[in-house]
Length: 374
Image 1 (cartoon, rainbow, N blue to C red):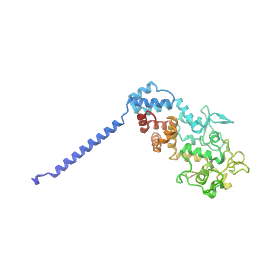
Image 2 (image 1 turned 45 degrees about the vertical axis):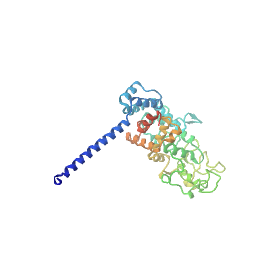
Image 3 (image 1 turned 90 degrees about the vertical axis):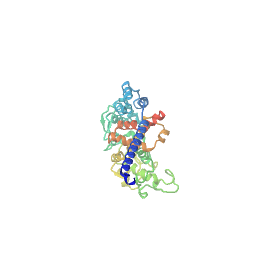
Image 4 (image 1 turned 60 degrees about the vertical axis):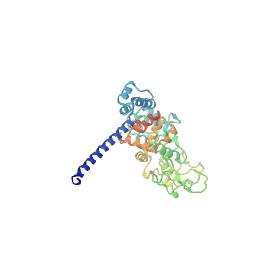
């Protein structure tokens, strides 16, 4: 009896049973996953109706509603692409830039609408979002290409507009550097040294070389921790006066008798103590040398932090999210959405970024669960 036992046959049957069981389990899990992700037409319709009021300030059209009812989530990208051709979307991009930079209107001979005009043009022509800080020209009210208004021998989008420079001006150019980093990289000082190596203390003006002890100027003990990085970025602005006009002869030196941080002829002071280096607008940004603000803007635009930061600001603006909402969102979501936008286009536009936000599963699932975003 033992000799007639076919061990190979039993082994083969066991393998077949395991394969069948595994296949059944796999199918069962996939089916459950699919069921969990099922979206009803009404959920899709409610979601896009909510977004249309935020993004283009109008209700869904009957054609859009019909498309959503028939295609559900598959219709989202097509509808967003259609919205990107709507003048109301272009105007909303203008408003986004104006709120981001706190610029609009005109005052004292400065046209504070110029940054918004560039944002509108970038959205209307579906230019890369990076053009916001790297564009080699600006745009006027009629949509015509024009030189930016600082008089600098180079341009860097909104960074080289008198509107941005005037609104962010202040002693030592700290406000300008801080706004550039916060609005386009979502970073605050001090930065990790792996992101931005520090200036040497001996190369800095005494006010900011202090590493310990009580001082009478600045932010208290250890000014060096922030200003050793601030000082690198403020140097790109050393030739722009308080009103944002480029002055090639700027020295970056403290004016005798003036308030700390202010130089002659309405200019601002460098963080560097060497007079030759103080007047040199070349510096370091994210560990890379740059000859001027134009080159610095390109380094920022190429940073892995730039697009996730754009996503963060766009979500706050277009989805009308509160500070509490924003604080609850994990940074990984911004990075994921930025990568999804790059699938649409390696150098995504306003509309690519908006499409990636709207079609992101986590954003949509949040709406389905709570009826709000995110």
